[in-house]
Image (tube, rainbow over all chains, first blue to last red; front, side):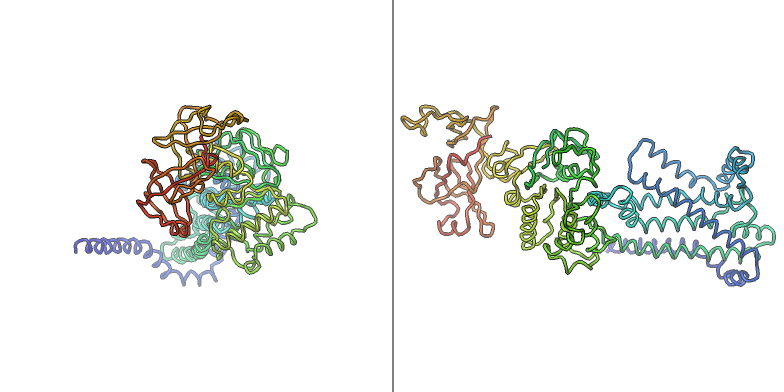
Length: 268
Length: 370
């Protein structure tokens, strides 16, 4: 009797704890969308600054994600497939941006890419100004979100059994063809999901961007600006729009994950 | 032809150590060994997936240690098939057909695919998604995929294990036919000793990353190099004892006959407890000697049979284990158990039962000392 009652009690307690956490997470976002969602969508029609911020955010996040995918994929593959000296150090370095506060990341980037730095001066000579431009936004987004892609891509590659690649080699494919014909398609969904996570993280970035490029404003910077300049009521619609944008990659991610689970179920 | 000499390789913590064997051109080699003995690692090393750390590996007369897998033209079939899940069955089979390294003879890739599809009766599966295939179907498609590129060597890792008995027999036969028709050198891993005996021209016995013995399968099965190998290969009668040469007092000696020694073979007497066996061969080096008699070599009768067999013992049936049409009969000969393999029909016709007196007979040649 007691044995049966205990699991029931623990189940009820677990349910209560989970409900409280869920409420804590959902309530502010729900409230924000309820209060500002419709107003935010309406405001898109008449608020040129919000529209520009939205386009800028989407464009810079997409460019940062593309750069992250192109440069991060080989690193992720290397970490998943090869054992080499310094592998653990490389992994730790790649994870570093995830654990430092983002304004600190912004300051660090400013030190390297600012006008006073050698790199910054070199870029200026080449006609590229980083600070205060969309390039700065891309840099900030890339810095804080690329490690998420590398980490996810590494897992995606590690999930592909190397024996698929071995069989393809015996069937006449060299290393590059195996990567293109076998590894990439099998890790594809995982890589896409990692890219979506990176894009979502880039869109929501604020701390590093605000240090490197306050203007032109991304949506996150604009919502902060409206809050400090005009108060909560003006910030709510902008913030609500940002939440609605974040729902798109989230839905995409769920769909990808569902398909991947189905796909994984069929593999040996 | 595959020739490995002192071949060593490492995979994680496992080592393949100084492996030597030879599978002649167009021969069928079988690799036998317990789980974890390095059978798959050996195949992967031959295929070029694992780079050797030492020794030599020659294929078709060329040293291939540094040759990448895609240039070896070696087909590899893993036990679980490893069909590419993002491709259809047809795309899997055609994957390597017509590849740069594949045979550029008269057959085009499409012809090669059509041939293996027909041989293994795979036409109904071609449009199927590989994730919907059964384990046996996957193995068939994997074999077809490896053969469609017309390899010069085929490596098979337990390729028939998931097939039902009827399909297994058909597939085994088909692989054997292809092996003969194409003069294909095959190296197959198997746990099935019957399969090893049926298919193999060369048997390689592997344990803990080392080759324990290699040679013709009947030689390895009948003349195991150690009692461990004998027991691993399923020899029921492995007796420890002492051996001595039979000279002029030998029962085998006939007046006027040539000496008992010829070509290194001696007439020998082996004693284990109260049992004394007669055999022919060389006395193994080392103190402890083991006699191996396969159960299939032991004949059971209810009365002593006059025959040329030198070994005849009286005992009582200790145990009869029936395995369908086959039975294992253990005869107690003064405390020493002797196991014989009989058909269930023979057990019935002889009226064998536990406690019944019976006689065991086997030839001197059936006793192998190691």
